[in-house]
Length: 598
Image 1: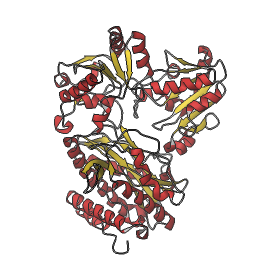
Image 2: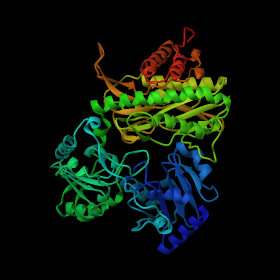
Image 3: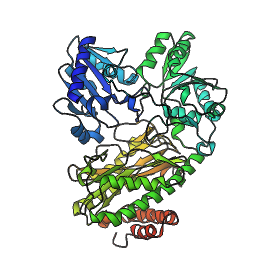
Image 4: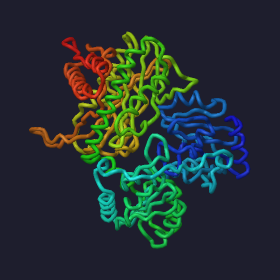
């Protein structure tokens, strides 16, 4: 079926169910970034393949909402004559729904695919329109999707203690003590990365992140009910989990929630990250639902010493792979024979040769010229562009290693760069350095630091439409909460051990894109002499040169130039012993000091 045919059939289903419309988010029951093929309903219906979005289909109109990373992509993938295109933040779905619905309309949704917070926003919009939000027992898209893939059955395996750094028993005890202190009997975990961290397990149910899809209930006595398809369990998993972890099929989750309700337990659930279905089932059963964050999110974000050592080691090996690629690119790109796809494949090949590498941490963004201006661009056979002299080439990539997760972006000039490109690249670099060198008191949030990275672009009326930094897991999600560096208020204070990206950028639509991304870890700095507050700062983990051909030295202060020289000296020292002679020679030139003119 074409997109038009699918929407027409969905509208027929609306009429059959007495609904004015239906919502189709890019989500599964776990509200994660990466969803299995079976749950990619938004892509099936609309053609949009980005990692965040929502479609609203009414009888006479439809709209799709995406964030700033995908405003160009959605134009290319989703027919504008069928769907209105809206910015998720500038024109939120709730506002559109309030305007689009008529009094008495019934708007359907799948309660497994929307968080409780999200449902309440939608209920408010419907109430203002004098309409009704209706939870549907079956998903209307599933009724149309005849060749819907089967659920994933990837093997669930133990994650070795030499990489995890803490035993699952220790972690369960920490969470249980937190529940007891909060007067909570149990917590429902719906995020697979929380299960992975808590129980030291990894899986393969989704691409790019080693997750086993499932649910869990953590009790105050440190026992856990784990709901996962038994067919996925490796033979050595039961001894690894121990007797305190009871395994049941996912279909048993409802009855367990009912039992908590009958016992009048106080049960904590995350309203921002868990499906509304969980809340409704607990409340109906008689439980006292306590709204609170996922208790695993914050301790998972604060990496322990073993995880941090692993991250540093993974970044050294990843830096070696990336430097081999950049050296190869410097030799081959001027010929004009390379394409975005062939370059990405070569980079993936270099990573596959590294010890402990498992898979990419996300699809490599390989964007030449105007494609680099598409923030989450993905090269395909249809869009594959040659990398030619005069272009900027942006490559954003990463790897999943057993000891860490990497994510790095470098922008390089193919041949001489234009004056405007050098000026704007240097402004992005100044923001990158400002954030990398920031010193801030304990209690500071990422949102309070976001302007550090944007200030030099703002000076000349420029900006970028994405966050400056996201959390990163330890052989887990390349995008991990709860910490972020973003304009939009994030209340989570940065704490030692948190790994984040530092990735300011600039994108000139139709011409080029610039992004400089390295991962950093929050580190304690103590109280300076004469000071009164304990300070935190960042240690940069990523080890890869920043293209000096794009740097305008006259725009850098002496302090900024010294930082760049010191960073390059560190890269050269760490990576040279890990690469071949030709790459080492290239690296020596790529990390040379700027010189006295800076």
